[in-house]
Length: 263
Image 1 (cartoon, helix red, strand yellow):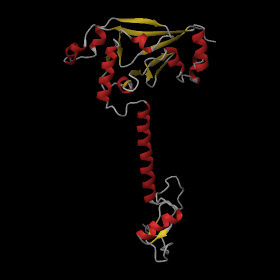
Image 2: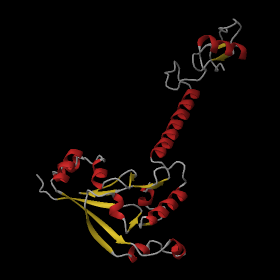
Image 3: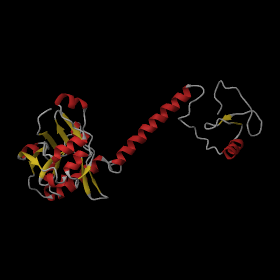
Image 4: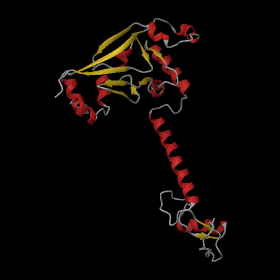
C-alpha cells in the first residue's frame, strides 16, 4: 500500500494510477492482477528484505525493524535450546527423566528450588536418542565457578574439561597461571592438576520407595543426611564412572587444583 505523503505514480504494468508498492522491489502497481503480473516478470516474491537500507526512515519502518529483531531473538533462543536437546521436553518432564535414568545408574539427583541460580543453570537431560544422560558440570578453579553445557556421561572427564574455554587474562595476571587449553593439557600430562569432588554417598532405596520422598517438606535435607566426603578423581575416567554410587546436587561439581608454584 502507498504510504501517506508519497507522490502517486503510474502502475508499472498497465499505466493506471498506482495504489500499491511492492515491499521487495518497490514496483508500483494498481491492482492484484498487476501485482501478480509484476512478480512473474521480475521474479519477485513480494517479501520485504529487513536488512535493506530504506531511503526514508518512518515510524512504520522502525516498528517493522523492531518486530524483525524481536523475531530473530526468539528464533535464536529456540535454536540454542535445540542444540542442547531439550526443546521437545518441558522442564518437569526433563527433570523426571533425568532423575529416573540417573537412579538406574545408581545416582541420586537432588533438585534445588526453582528460584536458586544452580537450578536455573541445570540443563542436564536424558537423551532418548543415544540413551545417555548429558550432564552439566561445574568446574571450580582459582576464584572462578564455570558451568559447562551438557556433556555425555560417556565422556572422559579430562576431555570434558579440555573442551571448555577456561582462559582468562585476569587470572593469568593475578595468579600467573595460564588456563588455556594447551596449558591445561600440559598440566594434566605432567600431573600438575588434581581434581577434587565434594560427594555424598547414596542412601539405598528402590524405585518403589520414591513415595517416601515425595511427602518430605524439606527435600534438600537429603543432602545433609548423606555422608559428605572429598574424593580425588582420576581425570582419565568417564563422568559416569565418577558419579556412580553417589548423590548429585543438581549436577556434578569438581574443583581443579593446580599443583605448581606461580611463576
